[in-house]
Every structure is written in structure tokens, then in C-alpha cells.
Image: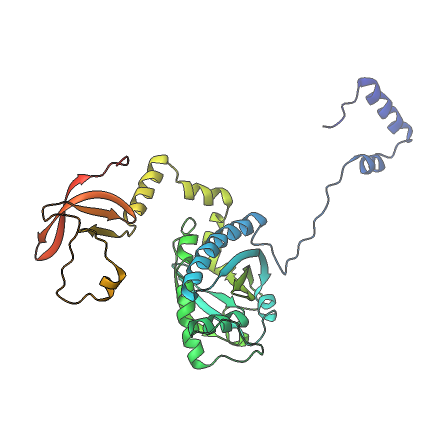
Length: 328
């Protein structure tokens, strides 16, 4: 808050000015607090602020968890993925940092217009191909270009790797990623001008014992329509829903679409291993149930219903007769 002068101080100041003993310009310069001037680079304008970069990290952190879970089962080995950073760079800076050979997937993310680049380290690509073909997944000691067969395998893997992406982006924008092509030379993946600004999300990936990097290069011209939604408050608001009732309905709808296995147990019995290995067609096994007994119905691993067997429209069916309470 500025200092308030008393009437006597004002009189003394006016008297000093009239006598010429005070330089008003010099006094204002020494007493006025100057605001620091921040430099602005017009060649590289800041189009993605820190909060938007943080939101991108949250989005791709969710993507990494889903992708690591999928790849662990798909490759039958341990896979760990984590987001390292999200920053703004020019496309020229991104392309200059690439080494040949590399794996550059050019991807469309409709309804957003334009293409993005999904880059995977070559050593990770070799390890993935080796695991798919039954090898230990140790990768290559000496880098070489990918063969046509290896490129086809990579296209299939990348297509699977894009599957978790819409779920990670759903709170900001519904997208439909589609792989256009894979390039192994950075010079053939010039999707925008070198000076154009991009948002670069860098992730570390480990497949078995092989470590490498993955990058999503998002041109600003592609994600510009959703930049105003790349804020943490918007992202979490969309995740929770604007209204508790709407959120509960949305959650219920998603649960209702979940696939779950249901099995009916006709009966049980115990036999010796020697009897089991000598079973032949036509042998009869006595179960612990009767012909009029109810079947036990399991939903996943949980026993939930009793039912009667029957036929419906020419197919085997069951008719639920009783709900099993939790205490049973």
C-alpha cells in the first residue's frame, strides 16, 4: 500500500519544489517500484502453459498404466512404463533428436484434424519383435534397419498399443486413433513445418531387461481445438461429472456394459488319478447331485444363484430359482 503523507509533509514537499532543492523525476524513479520485464521470444511463442503440460502428463500417465498391463500379457514378460515429461518444443527440435533407424508411427486422431507422431526407440522395437517370435526379448546389440516382415509385425503391435488411448483422452475429447503408416527414417515423417510448435510427451519403457523411450509428438495445430480443456480443474470435473446423479448413471452404464463369465455346475465328484487317466467314451461318473437338484450358478468366481436346467429355442438354458444371499 502507498504511504499517505500528512499535511505538514505535503507543505514541506511543495516548499522544497518551489525552492528547486528536490528533483521530482529523480525522486519518482527512486521511490517507484519497477516491475521486472520478462523477455518474450516471438520465434517460439509459449502456446502450452505449465498447467496444460501437467494435464498432458496426467492423461498419458493413465495411458501408460493401461498400456503396461496390456503389453505384459501380450508379450508374456514384465513391462513398466512411466511418464518423464511433457514440454513444448518445435518439430525441428524433435526430429533432430531422432536417430536412424527409429519407429515413427503417423497417427490420425479423428475428429481432430491432422496427424500426430508416436515414436518408439528402435531397441524396444527389436525386443518386442523378438518376444512375439518366441525369443527372450533381449533386443539387438547392433542397430540395423527393419525388414518388411518386421514392419508388418510392428504395425500390428502399434495398432494394439493405440487401443488404450481413447480411454485416457475421454475426459477431454473423444478420439478415434488410426495408424496411417510406419516410417523408420525421420526424414520421411515431416508432417508439419520444422518451425511449428508441438507438445512432446516423453515416456520411459522397460520390456524385460531392455530399456528405451517413447514419445508422443502432438502438433499444436492438431490439439488447438481442445487446448482450453487441458486444465486440471476441467479434467477432474469431467471425470467426476458435473452432477452426482449424472456421474452415478454414467458409472452404472459402464458397469452394465462390462463382460463377465457365467457358469453352471451340474455336479461334483472325486476319482483317483488312475481312474481319470483310464476314462473312455461311454464311461459313467456318479455325481453328488440328483436329476431334480438345482444347479449352482457362478458369476465369475462367486456363487450367486440356483437354477433349473432346460431348453430354450433349441439351445441349452437355465431358469434361475433362487438368489444366494451373501451369508450363504
